[in-house]
Image (tube, rainbow, N blue to C red; front, side, top):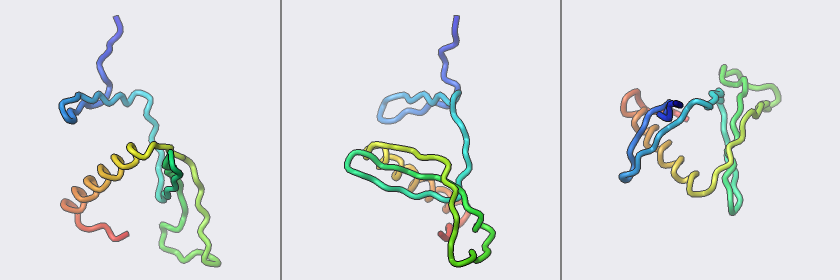
Length: 100
């Protein structure tokens, strides 16, 4: 008999149990992100650049290597914005303000 239990944590939101299945999740590092949108979707673009070393780039140009694009509907994007704001506040409460 197959095990139907979730592989990740569960949470309850508004009386609904959410089972987070992380069995197919991939982790990718990004030190830069941007977003664009049209009427139906938001596009989150993630990548890396080498300017994190604090060295002024040659010719005032930074090369960004985009690696991932996440496409979300406006409702999911707004929920993501809310949880990011909440997570950043909790982080800053514990570790101090992030200077962006």
